[in-house]
Image (cartoon, rainbow, N blue to C red; front, top):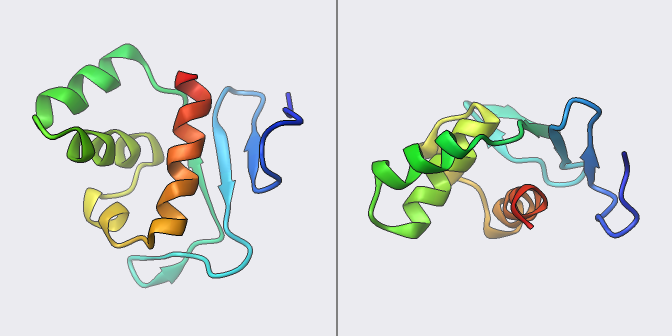
Amino acid sequence: MENAKNPAWLVENEDGSITVNYETRPPKIDGTDVKSLKMREPFVEDQLAADRASSNSAEAEITLISNLCEISPEAVRGLTMRQYSRLQTALSVFIG
């Protein structure tokens, strides 16, 4: 299921989820270095729930990503932009 155009740190899994790897500079979530995050494939309802949660598109995206990765929105907000952009790339695989 691996796609040649995806970066090496992004792995598409057989169950439809995506694993985002952080080999260097892993994010710290709840005090623990996290070397990978698994993002499940979203349902339409996930997008609708995120849109209902906020009228701001950036906040809605944070809500969606946190739900799909099963981490808190605060943990997503604590990521560096480089770390967050990997999650945005993973999300775009589902949407694009």
